[in-house]
Length: 352
Image (cartoon, rainbow, N blue to C red):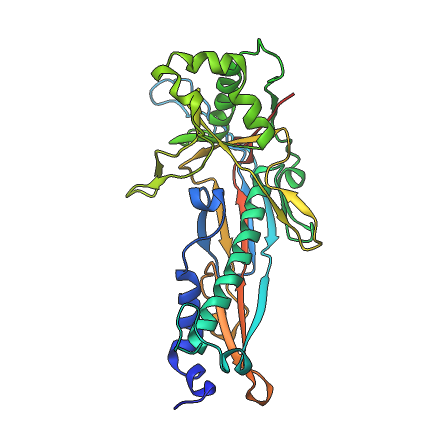
């Protein structure tokens, strides 16, 4: 019978196999990850340069045939280099973890290295995914991408002197034209796309914003006579959807009003200091377009000899023997930087 080191020295426990395994686990993260808003892109370096293009579309006057053309005026692009953050997480599979312990749900099968490794890697990936989800939410929330300790990794608006657009929906006022408010923020987002087409608009809402929206008199009046008021008697707050062959989500559940899907992103996460952080700040919501190229997540390669100057992957995993052959130390890591290349497309909405 092979010992534990024979098992871990086999090809199925090498860098490539473990990395393939951790990338093949089903996603466990929240709404932004499930919706596929961000396009993943691997890079070969640990820094990425982002160009914020100031190009504007301008109509041209006609000129006489044979005459000189109109001089093209180009706005200067503003560039910024960012270091891609590094998130490694360690665990171990000990010989004592397997000694005399049976597999859950089986009375006669003992736990083996493959089972324990897969379970630990799943736990580690979940934490990496939750961290990435939090960073992506930061892109929407004032352009501040932060790690688990609250340290700022990226400040899109501050770095380029941009102020995030914020619109009060005045939902505490019964006479507010909510449909008009929605039309205004959609138009602002479309203008910021500068000609790029969006398939649909979504809004991630805090609990308080979502409740205030669906209970507003003018919103309820609009749905009272549509389909016998069915929409007012259902919980349409979820973000479930099904992706089509082009990678675009269709039929995303949520409260649809004014050509926008409102999704209640409820809950909170615990940061590295043990403090609870709301996914979406109370009284706030964020509108953004789907199906565009403006939301990216750049991945740098792992800091292993085998991955030097290769295109980064979302997750990596590797193992090594512990001292005195008492077990195996396992590392999973992810090196992502989420960003929005046209941050003005994101519109913040507030209750008051």
